[in-house]
Length: 493
Length: 95
Image 1 (tube, one colour):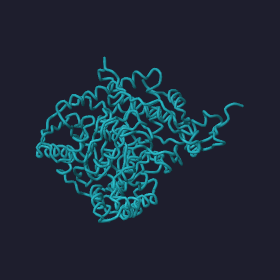
Image 2: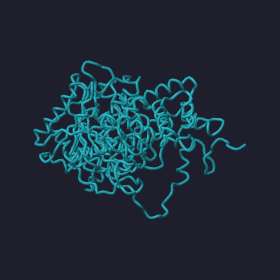
Image 3: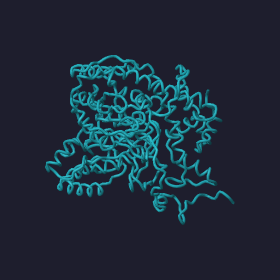
Image 4: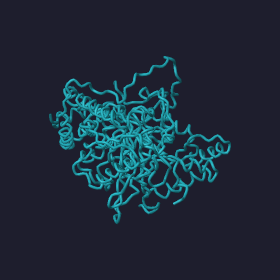
């Protein structure tokens, strides 16, 4: 493994500033790593020439003393973000060949901060999935393996390509998007940090829409500090997204003081799920102990409606998806399958262009929004959502952050949990509540299962209190001292 | 409330998704499984509760009603499966 690919974003910044290596060397090291690990199927497009040219420009800026926040830092971008002139297909067949004539605000912000794009990463089709197995580009392989078992495991999803790429040291960080856990759950499965900001903290403009009231961009990185640095560049008000919030973006990295003596951490009993492995329960208890040792106060909190979050999500998200995905009709871009008339063309295009899980969710969404069922399903779910958000408001009267496991199990084999959609949906049981309430949350790698797979702990904070979230996550990270790495590059198929 | 074959036909038509005859029954079964599971929401008392429409309370911002640079026609048509003379080409609608 090249020393340059083992760096953090913060370490690479320091090395570039100190001229220990050039941005071009940094980029070339990552390109070599990606080429050696194509078997992971983490990337669906490679933009190496562009990254090399950008690196040369970054080196010139660094030499001129004009380095910006992420100058010369090589990143990967989830295929859900529109990137000008580079395929942006949300890993769906229906967007075959689509190269946007515009750039998403979040990626434009990253490039304006000097970051470089190595390529686009694989993902579940339209971000609908928790194992990266619904991608039209095939599954992503998790760089981790169970001890003594060669079976290929899922990286989680939907940001599975981004998570696998960061874990396998193919990039220093990657963008993801999180609708119900799509950043945090794959981060936990791959042993890295994944952070979902408050709804409205990042612009959604140029992100291919799944469920607009839930979708939010965020970073996947190997350290909490790196997540803070990346979010710093990604966040901010955007006139092109009316739900992006006009609030100053604080210096997130500066909030990592390591001091949590003034914080109260809440532990919700309702996240104790039946059938959850004892080692996840034990890790959670360890997390409590770490915070106590660091001087934080840890108390019980109650979030009584937790068990209703997942069914609420599986009404709200498909409803919004059925509306958002109505735009794919084969007329102006992407796949077109001809028919005898326009209606038949739409129906054939959509039948062939959307995969099974996406079709299923569009049908569910159409049903719960249709006349006669709207009140019973959609309106009911929106009311329960209000109550779930109130649960958190009440909890945050007495605590500063809530600590839970990120997912109820570790990474599983490709092909498992495929027969029953609800078994797959359970991946997000602990991440969905914060999504419904729009709250910032982060997954930090905290330990290993008995057979050597990473597990994450999850923190949730008040709206726009990312500084407290990062501060608490930083302490968790130090205490956990998670330094394990997946097998060396080339060891994977 | 349960979904039968005819309901799948109806929502597939509303969704503009063509479905093979032999896929209708299995889809009805899958959708029923999911709906039976979400129906546990009926246990929650939501009397007098307002539906949530946005995750974060915020007033919609306003901007000046001024013209902004549009997207060039060539850019818009660059991804079209079929285009001609500045227009998208679609199947004939009127004979």
